[in-house]
Image (cartoon, rainbow, N blue to C red; front, side, top):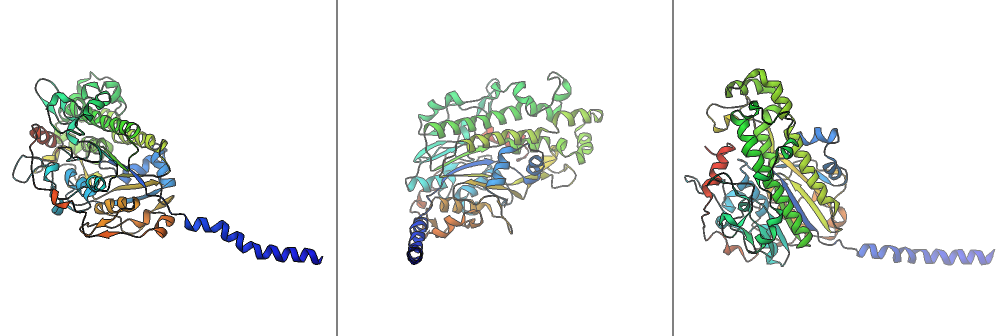
Length: 461
């Protein structure tokens, strides 16, 4: 008995030492920097996403909801795509980065990357020797020299019938636009992944529509005809091109410390088909357009689910990314603004170029985090983050410093407790490359085609 007591006493002395040996490595563990994968879903909105989640139509976004972090994100007004996506990628608002909209005020000259006054995240990461890949980001022509690959937003011009050149849908050398990619020779590698609007068949489009007879003239009246024959084919061709190129880069040029791609159809289908999704003002809109009201139910059947179906396609793209994420990968899915009823409240305005549409941008978009160094199954409460917060958060997850001129803050509510407890924000005066920006301007031979496209979507008069 005495011997047993001695052995027990000895074990009691050893237990604290064993605990130290077990726990000490855990206290030393410091999370590795994230590799950021960012997918932009233009105009994505929780009011559209949530009903689809409830019926199981977005299984991959559901995975993020269950295993990651979600929140609204507040846009900057006016929520014009070139300005707000540039805000996301620079961490400063349009007054500082200089890209106020589609075109320079008082002109028909579109903004381009040479006019941006501050470095974007890809410039900063290149400065630190990080490998970056940028595909289809707004206002990235001419493609910039980066430590990695850049496929500019102008590469998807679509040479259509005759001499016309459409803005979206084709990446090809025949357009004779210089500096579409960096490095320049990258464009040769991308040709197998190019999808053109001419490649988009009725079978492809049926994925988004419920049309019984594609030769039925009822589907080709006024705005519907333009949408079916022009707007949606080039939008989807561009989105497929962007995503396929993005996947090619990830699997053939990676690994990347930061890679981005962009999907626009979640915005375009909203502008074109909101009146059939939310039918509150459909009668007034059809009457305004001169449509046959007796065809109302036919149009609702054909186009009422189009927006939802485009979200489903985007969800599949997200699923492809999730399926091969590595242990250091952090996926950020976000929109630049949301989408909802037209702000006039009546579906159209006689005094507005956009009177042909009944949906419009909403003030709050979506942001989601999934993977390394972020919380699991968490919904951010309180005031939502802003667009300027995205870049500081990405830099922090990558363990890189933030310059004092940045206007955003780190979204610490999205970051895991383990990462937060072992890392503190790093602030520096500047990156030392700021003086390189905003000192030159270039013109693109297809600038006016961009203007035409923006008019077709109602952004410009």
